[in-house]
Amino acid sequence: MQFVSFLILLFILPLNRLATQNSSPDIFVSINKDDLIQHIEYIASDALMGRNTGEPGNQMAAGYIAGQFEKSGVQKLKNAMEYYQELPLALISAGAGSLTISGQTFEQGKELIFIEGHPVNLNTEAVFLGFGEKPELYENKSLKDKVVIVWLGSEEIRNPVQAFRLSDKKLQYAREAGALALIEMYNLQMPWVSLRNYFRGKQLELVDRDKKEIPFIVFNAETPELITTLKNAINLPLQIRFDGMVKEQVEAVNVIGMIPGSDEMLKNEYVLLSAHFDHVGVKKGVPAGQDSIYNGTRDNAIGTGAIIAAAEYFAKHPPKRSILLAAWNGEEKGLLGSRYFADNPLVPLDKIIFNLNIDNGGYNDTTAISIIGYKRTGAADIFEKAASAYGFKVHQDPAPGQNLFDRSDNVSFAAKGIPAPSFSMGFTDFDAEIFRYYHQLGDHTETVNFDYVYKYIQSYLLAAKLIANQPVPPKWESGDKYEQAARELYGDKY
Ligand SMILES: [Zn+2]
Image 1 (tube, protein in one colour):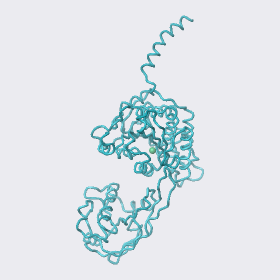
Image 2 (cartoon, protein in one colour):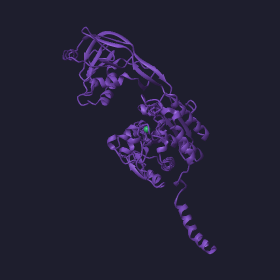
Image 3 (tube, rainbow, N blue to C red):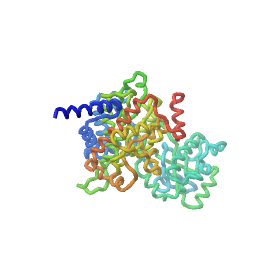
């Protein structure tokens, strides 16, 4: 027996030594599985009522994350409030308003939608400028103290989202030309009533509390006579009365922390690890006694758990670069928290060399992880290493048509030039398995394979560690649409 054991030792020892020589200590990261499950179960619990931005359960989630940061010894940023960045959010709706032209009066919520604006009582003249999509159209038109009338969208742009994005520009041109209001005539395929119903609810938005915007009105002029009158407006008399937008302040925070890097030089740079913790709240109209809570285990209690695990792991094992930890709020309302941080960063943006976001819709392949932007941000080798260390393949964006890269919080930073992919659980397609849980009441912790989640999150942490220790920061693939932004952000360093 002893001889056999000796023989085994003889053969195993050198192999072991070989293995340790070949693998740097970076090859695995290890975290406590039970703790991780507990964090995810709490974030996804019914007590947090679906973590809707601005509601008590959302604040409880923020408090829990901050508590875990504190427990791990994560540092607070100097210009934050404890671990929080307050978001200037408000629920916005239009007050009463009307427009009178040639003796006919139209009302807010009927033929008119006031989308923006401070209170006014105007008796002035209007000028028609076609689509009004180019700044030249506003030149030499004596628009001061008048109202600008245009068509919604442009010759090419008929899609509502793009048309309203263009409206922001038109509003700016009109304001700069000294106009007192902008009216856009409705002309899209989508029925007027759908748009009106959409704006009838309150919109959760980031607000600039000091900004005074001129009224911006979308007008559904129904009769051909009226449309002709508006299209021929040179100095058309009209009256606009508006009570202004009603803004109800909403309490909501991002949770932010920092772990200093171990390298004297590289610690001045940050790798931003981020996940949104908000979800969509409670379903309305569900009979009492039935489940109505959107628990959002996959989206995104699991990602939030990864950030809490990152706090624990990196506080104990700091990599060379500093780690910035962020749990974003308001993602489900339009990436509000990450957008606010990107516009009001608590560390200089050009010191953030990479943002590794983690966000999940669902999964249908536990042999893999998915990385949205896998080959775009110069870290494909690292991702492969981080995946294969836990036995995973990597899927890249499985549904390019869905434009996922630009739909999660990573885009708030990509648009500023920071290489910013997003980790997701393994999925090959948007199939029935994904839609079974994606934004559904049944996205419960019991339906999740935690053996897989445990390895998936460790793989995320390993990728983060490798990036934070990498001598040279990863760069966008050449020709990427965000490459130019990176040059502007990082300047000569890039
Ligand atoms: Zn999400």
